[in-house]
Image (cartoon, rainbow, N blue to C red; front, side):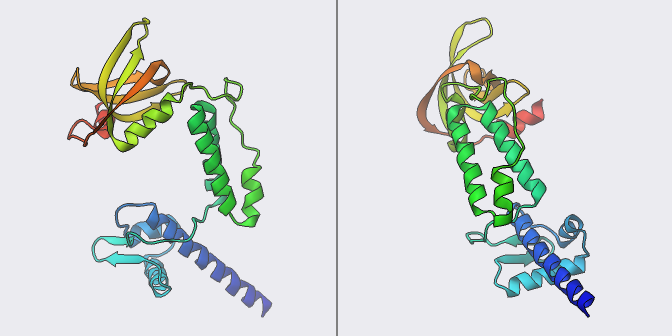
Length: 238
């Protein structure tokens, strides 16, 4: 009798965990996800996914299913905090600590605040393991941010809002130049951050080492992405 009760409780816990996993998966995607894809990710049958979706909808979860497309979260809805698996928390922690060791002071502070926010909303049994986890990232800069003058933070800002800028740059030979560019993205290699932009003068993609950018002058000119001239187009051109 007790074995049956334990099995029943364990099954209920597994299903509850799966329901949270479905919500986490749906809110991480911008496009609908089919029941077949969800079944493969969660290692259950398609029939189980349909039952779980019916359960979520009966509980008032903002899940919409469209025939031939799949399931997605209704726009503009509020969901409870994310449920993180232990390995997901490890990945977040290592990633944030890598950011802290390899960026400027503004982004390093932002990473610290983000870690504290994540830690503050975790269940009690995760909180101590997350904030005090023995997962560290060593930097050759002896714990100091590797980039100076908060240039990377400003570049991230203009990339986010799509603002055309003039950058003042020192090339490998020590020569100073200035370029009007449309900021597209940043790429981190083993030891170098590259700023990717569309150069108005050359009418082509250009990459600049972030540590050689001396000044970013804002223009207030907000641009729209152009076909063939975006960050994904640059990646495809490599």
